[in-house]
Length: 248
Image (cartoon, rainbow, N blue to C red):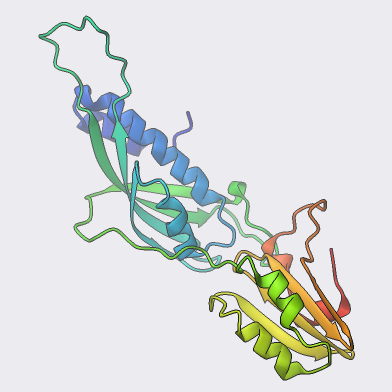
């Protein structure tokens, strides 16, 4: 099993009673899993990271997520719960004290770039490392994180039905506004080369296009499922691309 910071984890074993070791090891396993997840987030959106981690409520309590941009990818403050997984025999001696059932350990995990990465390149797991510091468990309340911003399921049929079939830019903008989209979703509506282009971009780079010209409305996702995935930094998702009919 990979260890993020051998000295930190070794000290935990030294400072924790032997009877709790199985629960400590269980907490360490979960700590490793969290660190692997943190290395994979691209782009790093603190609220999205926090929401994702809080889905594992059985083992994790997330107090804070910070960081923004490539020079400051992020820091997470968590409590990790570990449970003793030692098998119990049916004939265990009565004078043997069983290990503690659970243990809670708190950590500050700093996610940093190991080497420079081009601004237009995707950050991979190999580009990041996680520095682990054991901390006293915070007295503050756990963090509350909104779900990641997503386009509503009805966006495609709504645009197909409500976009104008003429070059009426204001009517196109009204149709998009009527969706009441999450403010984190970028909206770009403009006229290019005699067509109205509409581009709706989710924070993780997923995009929906539409274009309008006389008597015609088209709505589509530009990223083809059979093509190699494109890094979010390369997904421009602009109204000009939509008006041109772009599809990768």
